[in-house]
Structure formats: C-alpha cells, structure tokens
Image (cartoon, rainbow, N blue to C red; front, side, top):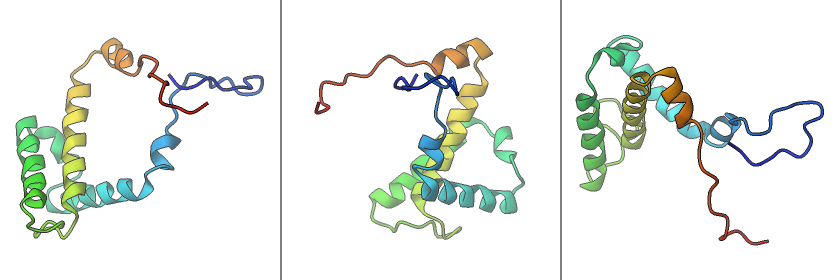
Length: 123
C-alpha cells in the first residue's frame, strides 16, 4: 500500500497505511472539520448525522460550495465556520455512509490500490 520501508528488522510495517500522512500533514484542516462536528453536536447531538439520509448531506455540501462559488463569503453565516470545512464534513458523512454499507471484505479491498505511475518523478 505504501512505498517499501527499507529496514523491517525491528518493525514490520512495510506496506501498511500511514495515518500520520493525514494527522501530521493536515492538522489545521482536521481541526476545522472537528469544529464543524462540535457545532453540529451542540445544535443537534453527537453522531446524529448517522440517522440522516445521504442526499441531504449532498445538498448541504453543494449549498456550501455554491455560497463560495457565488462570492457570498467564505464563512457560513449561521455557524461562522468556513464553508470549505462544512463541505469537507458533509463529504466525510457521505464517505462514511458509503463505507458502512460495504461488507468487511469489500471495505478491505478498497484500502488496496494499484501502484501509481512514477514517470513524473525526477530521479
């Protein structure tokens, strides 16, 4: 799944997913999405999004996107949080709903990917 790790003698983690790519690579983006989740927890309740059909989150995601595209500002009037953070949160709701509908084997299969083309990299 990842590039081979040179030394596997003391820790055999070659080929495993690296969560630090997300958590160390995008901490500010994650915090912005967590702020949207915290806002939603106060407005509704924690994890209440799991009881809402996906199309409503698709609509919400698109409304936030359209606000930005129409130059109506980058922050949501109601929450004061970034529209992009709301979009990302809604996309994550949709992704989680789609992933939850898969069998464990189907889900595991989606964690595997083909080797990417590397011809663009300088040697």
